[in-house]
Amino acid sequence: MKYAVLGTGMVGHTLASKLVELGHSVGMGAREPGNEKAAAWAKGQGERAASGAYADIAQWADRVIVATAGGAVVSVAEAIGDVSVAGKLVIDVTNPLDFSRGMPPSLIPELSNTTSAAEALQASLPSARVVKTLNTMNHLLMVDPSRVPGPHDVFLCGDQAGAKAEVREMLAEFGWTEPVDLGGLAAARGLEGLMPFWLSMWGALGSPDFNYHIARAH
Amino acid sequence: MKYAVLGTGMVGHTLASKLVELGHSVGMGAREPGNEKAAAWAKGQGERAASGAYADIAQWADRVIVATAGGAVVSVAEAIGDVSVAGKLVIDVTNPLDFSRGMPPSLIPELSNTTSAAEALQASLPSARVVKTLNTMNHLLMVDPSRVPGPHDVFLCGDQAGAKAEVREMLAEFGWTEPVDLGGLAAARGLEGLMPFWLSMWGALGSPDFNYHIARAH
Image 1 (tube, helix red, strand yellow):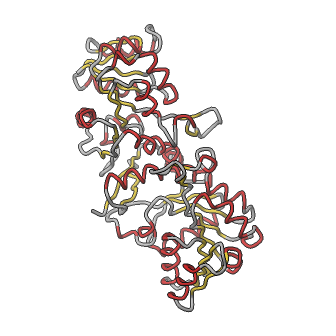
Image 2 (image 1 turned 120 degrees about the horizontal axis):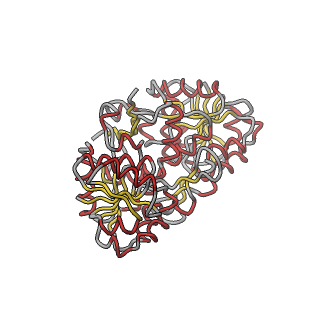
Image 3 (image 1 turned 180 degrees about the vertical axis):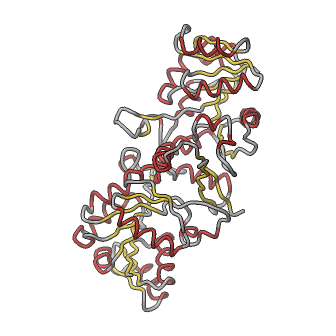
């Protein structure tokens, strides 16, 4: 499978490297085609890795992961262009954090509460099949659930069952055997809305190595 | 201990009845002193139960629980008056849900993201010691953690350590032995922000009998 990972931060690096390790071909996309971090990553990963501009990498890939800042999703979508991802699975792992009011960050009002980064991304890429997942945890845990012992959960939501089935495949390769399906893409409001709680919990525990487990009666 | 439970909905009824069962004296407060639901509840509970207007019940009590709609906290605070609760523990279990845009509800913009119902309540009752807790689960689970098997968590936050210690006492009486302290009252933004996710999960599971467990590596 050819994956585009758009974003050159820690989340992008972790996901891209894991996908290469799993045997996939991976392109790391950046705003500028000559981005040094993306080029250095690709050089270090060998022949199954590449780097380039968002649109070129997305066009080349079978599946696209958006791992940029959440506030950038609309501009990333504009840079990609809907045609480049028509019919493709687009996996959104972002959080629309607003650092403009200081720490801790809040959520960007235009991308939260009655909407979400995932919905804004889908609206900007109407021909793509957007699924939200993995945004509720530390990047290292995303690709290695065993970092936290015992049962704990990853969530997903999206409007197309087939797209969610593809995401389940990828999550299974990462070690997530039973992802919890929250329904349509609008459930991303809740998933992105977990971030302020997550940040408080990180502060309380002093470590990002934790995750949610949904304990159920039935 | 004399508890005021302000609010006549399901949450208020459940908390008030449990507190009576535990041997406390409980007054159920309503906006109008002759509220029929509050009077009927008190009549059914016997001699340790009373009902009355918010201010009278809060004045009488040692500890006050706000269990109204989250959007009402400022008007409830105005009805109580700061003098009635000076130095008292005020426990906020509300969620500032906005039903004005249809279902599912979102969060009231003026009481979320960069603030919270808990912070608005504290600002309106500056002499009280406000603690947020119990807002992250179904009302029946609040007073009976055994409804959900295995480990799962209740959270609290507030600006006064002594007030949080008093809340721990009450939670222990309900069966919560190890509440997770998220720090200052501003962490209520995260706790109240869990509600949209909770509603999605309720829809996905088809039952409100679930709760969060924070799985930790350390």
